[in-house]
Length: 473
Image (cartoon, rainbow, N blue to C red; front, side, top):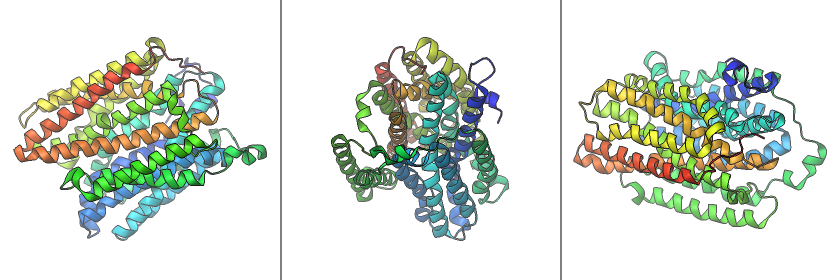
């Protein structure tokens, strides 16, 4: 990937910063893709590993739980070891986990290796955002322009992951779903060594109270996130939210999360500084990133099923039909960054969410006979909206923040997006399953209407964003 992908000539970003940002994007690309690329292979894994659907589901669930557990420790680890060393360590863990996953001999070993892989991936994304925002602060650059680059893996991962997975499964063995990470991460490691600035913490910083690990906070927040995500992952099964293994973990997670917030408000060196939620930018960004779970992950759960179950396309065909949405997301990325600088975060976010809602309506009205080409055009426009909303919503979280606050904001917003994605998927799965009794077309129609409703809510709540946030450091 060329540095010009990060910032074309004339944007005012120094070359060394462009190369550092490129290194971060390449490293994050594999980790983000891996969260979605495996989902499409679950049936193949059941057959090849002689397992059950229930057990193989843990290949994805275990990865997501491990990813969530390490997010809260990223800020402390960066302060303790330095951003560059932590980035290299996280990518190395992810790379080793990828190779081990490709060598798995049964379902149990694959699940264990995926958990190990998730520990590396969980650090990558919040650390990527922190290092990028710190780079922007170093040269006084535009947050929104930087975010236009750094949000690319987040926007394209859920869309291109199933496409890439479908292509691999059509021609190669499932082990290549993990081996494809090897060359990407190898390049990312080389670029990180060469281009990321050294930021080893000073002895004084290591001794600082903020460098001490908040053990009680970790004991509270890590199982809280596990409970929330585990419970939500069980909602799609028969019984929905009425299942004990759904509402039980979610309730426990909520209780532990409340306990963590109370703890964090009473100490000066909490694992995550939840006081930042008192800032308008962090609070509105977190709220809207939670709702993007319906726009991105909820819809990405529905769309492949729509093409396969209602329209009769194969897994590969369904994956390829999602390409226009990815193209649209890529096309709007740079423009959205510029518009955020000129007309403000509120206008771009409201317009983006409105476009997503409008372009989801045709799927809520579609049936088995609706023109495929019409829906492909709609997906292209929907992608434009998806690429636009992430930039103002994510960039506004860092307005007015300095030092360790940047890392804390990265962790808070990442957790909001992770839980929101699981919640969005759970809701549409329950709606789809409940409505299928009236026929497949009615089931998908109701599920898409729910997605439209939550997207409209996100558009309305976007008015809480600053009209013209300061986007330069």
